[in-house]
Length: 297
Image (cartoon, rainbow, N blue to C red; front, side, top):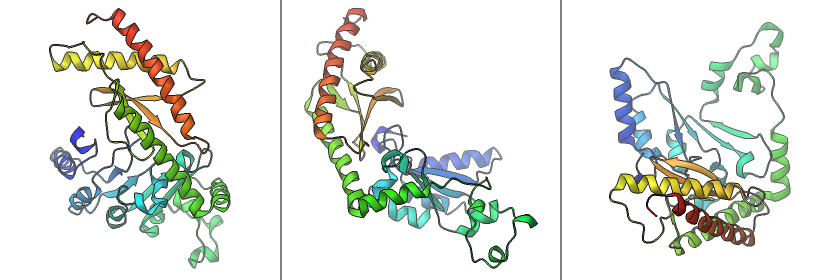
């Protein structure tokens, strides 16, 4: 995955990987594409991937949209989420309402293009579970949709959320999260102290602290190493303020980054402002400490 592709998978890379697998005698049977990776919010090029997989009809295409999928409730984000390509190429699609959908853990949604393909693979109906209604196809036996015979009543809490908020209320929650993240990204762009590592993705921004002015290293490898050391120090310091803010880290290729994700119902602009003040304070302290210990000081 390349930065110029916003770390999303392209069809050419998939084609190459499939050819290499076949040359080794391996036969992949499932491919999982992603809309909104946890790490950076990357979106795979599902149009290209779908066209590649037309030549491999035995491969099941599942699309994982764990946290970003709930944004498909808003029409304006459906192009970003590749919804047309999902409908055209994917056999199944999943998203987690417990991440951005206003319910507690766990509540994952699964859509399948062909229910029969799924249940044919998982249906185990011994005589003591057989009913006339099942044999006649009059009921949906959800035990045949997954491995276990029993299942929790997860749909109830989703029903309560949708009844309480309604479609427009739910969309309002999603849009507010995106708007707050856009506001945070604007603060990062305006600061010479920081930079965005990727284009903001819905309610997620990935950023890092820049080297202090006046620090110049003799090659790219040393620069990357210094940036990573500095940002690890920055993240360690801000993590110590865990009673006020919680940011997670990620690695994009060889770049250590910090993730700023918005998803809580009660998050407001004032909270983003407070977080930004804390981020700047931690960055200044981390930079001073790093300079005092670093050989580039």
